[in-house]
Amino acid sequence: MMRFFSAKVITWKEKCNHEGAMVRTQIQLTERQARELKRIAAREDVSMAEVVRRAVDAKIREGAPGVPWDERVRRAMAVMGKFHSGLKDVSRRHDHYLAKAFDDR
Image (cartoon, rainbow, N blue to C red; front, side, top):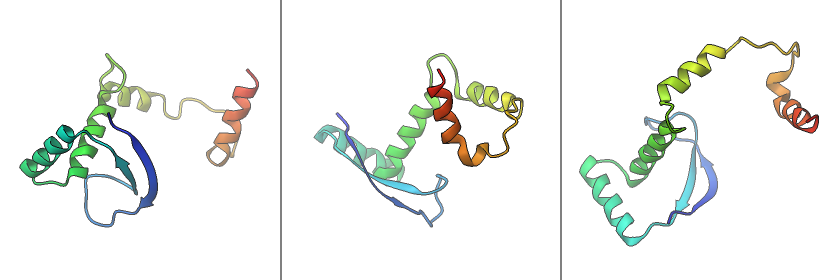
C-alpha cells in the first residue's frame, strides 16, 4: 500500500525530464516494493525517485480506459479557442467563475 504525504515544493535546477517545480513527497512501500524499486533504479542507472516519477507519468498517460493519451491530447487541442465567454478576466478569476457556475446549478 502506498501513502502520499505532501511537503514543500522544490525548484529543480538541474536538467531533468520533468518541467517546473518538484514537490517533495514521502511514500511508504512494503519491503518487497522498496527492494524492487532499488533494483530497478540500479539497473536503469537512475534514482529511485525517477523510477517513481516515470511510473506515475505512465499511469497518467494511461488515463481513462479506452481513450489513449494521444487521442485525449488531440481532442483537447481541437477545442482550444473555440469557446468565448465574453469575459476579459477569466485567466485571473477562473476559480471565481467556476464556483459561481456550480452555485448556479
